[in-house]
Image 1 (tube, rainbow, N blue to C red):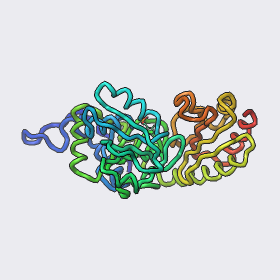
Image 2 (tube, rainbow, N blue to C red):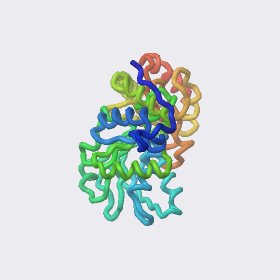
Image 3 (spheres, rainbow, N blue to C red):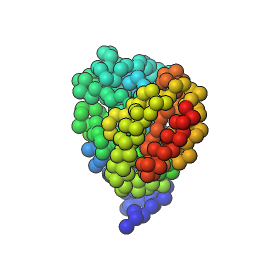
Image 4 (cartoon, rainbow, N blue to C red):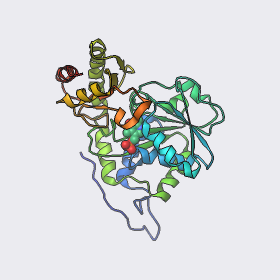
Length: 321
Ligand SMILES: *Cc1c(COP(=O)(O)O)cnc(C)c1O
């Protein structure tokens, strides 16, 4: 049966007192149901937000004070760096480090990404967990079905639920999961006071996506493995990055012009941003990330389409490289 969707913003008091639900900025039934499913997947207490960036913002407002420094994995999702720079007037400082080794000493929060998007390095979670500062792991690309960072000593797992968790490119949402009840309650307080809350409709769509997460990921991953191996053999492709699991590949062609020609030539694969959805997407990332990545880097998110159809599309497009 499909879960009912209660869009109420407010619920009657029970005997003059607020019941489990009273005002939707604090909690609502669709949100709580979705959080239970997300918490079970990652092994902790989940909170839902209106976007992945809303989740990061809530983490920063809750876990840092003015003057504190975040150690951010080099090559992690570019939006994190842009947000932290934007928050500089509030005293947020950031240093970048190579996440395949230990985080720098004397920082107040560590943010790693597993695997980093789009360079697809994996963090050394053992070295990171040994650091005294709290550790946040953005595991959007791995998903909880391939990595459960809380089991590796991370304090907070973060996901853009917009991506593979929801999976259909029809909702923007974010998640944090923590083992500590105390930290969960502090994040919840920030979320409620600041109003960084996902709508019931968004929660309902994320939860519907979770019902097919396993089979979607299995098919997308099997297809990505084949495509990564074939791309590595293609004469127009210089470098292929694929972590060996999940749906995301990045590869380099000769230069920015060649990348532009390839992205405009794909047909089945959409030339669009985002990742993790059921429809494959390809884009040159230089337009967003500038010189932190190679000019010819193309990011491919593999969807559910027939693998041979995807390869034919790529082969044709690479003919223009
Ligand atoms: C998309 C993305 C985000 C940001 O999430 P939004 O839902 O777009 O706000 C954060 N981290 C990673 C790895 C992402 O891919």
